[in-house]
Length: 479
Image (cartoon, rainbow, N blue to C red; front, side, top):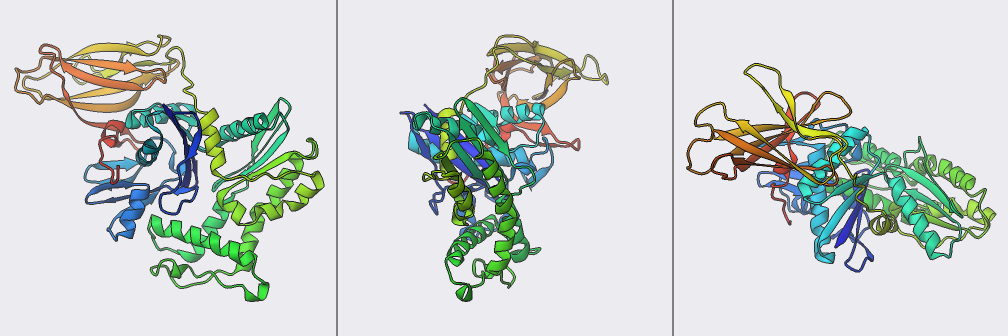
């Protein structure tokens, strides 16, 4: 059984899993063999395209609306990011489709996946994070645990300390949307995120503003633009000043407006990032002994000269710099940091929102009480209000710490057979160790299972977007 770990960073992600022997394996971008993979999603008349399939769809010239997921899009279960004939797709749905693609890419390399850990700087409050975890678990049919990227760095530092006979370890991580500095000395472990440092996103956004203007470029064009820019920047750093060439974005995609970016301008933007970072690393190195390992982790940051910017700190503190790659961080998360964080009992009430009589307000009918041992099963019977009714809606709700009941999702079931009219249905809840809810329904008389039709989750504006059960049934190209 394998664990899959994914770190979301800006519009890209890193992925790794543990094979059946427990060894970590990086899931590289299938096209370029890069450690980072684009979070691209596209929709056309044939359906949704996730991850690498969306890239190939764009290359094949398929007309589509493109969307690139970022953790900043998660503000709650809210606004649709892509609309189709099948319904509105939320940012949560886009993330779920991208994770489905990551799971599909990893499965041929290492067998069945037991759990998925997703690390990202997520702006959601605690309750919304729990809902997101449940939503993703429903789509993937695999337990999904949400983590902060700082947890991945803690795993990396502990593993590095163990592999180096307990020696102190220092690390700096430069992701697309954040910078982290961490150290472990004896039993003391500390990891911080540098607030106010926009990391490579600062350079990325400056590049996009210069090259893209108001043009809505495809996810593939944006990905290629960044990759080609990093390669150009790496080459120009080693080129004499008088021989340096301009970066011409429209050569990447002829639909981009003509223009040029000088190395001097790109360098000044990079200095805004690398200056504060050097000071933070120097401060973290103050209390550790000479000869400590300094791990510099960052796929594109390494190629853009962060190692050279830290040379003065490295020499002053006599630091050792072992070879490091960005995917080592997610590999450490896959090997050491994936756990189910399973509560032994339910921390909330689960049930249905029902009306006692027509036009009355809905009230909570609890099927599982708070404090019950998990996993658990609960059941309730709903009376049918009209003869010949074949379609049924169930409002699934949760109640936390005495707060008003909260609608989690709506489920719709239908009777597909030709049996007699249904007078009642039995709704069964199954809540697993992570408090993810699975629901099914049967005819209370014939015990005939009712067919699932669709699911919806409430948005921030009182509308509804596609629920996890529906997203789990969307066919993905290449999966």
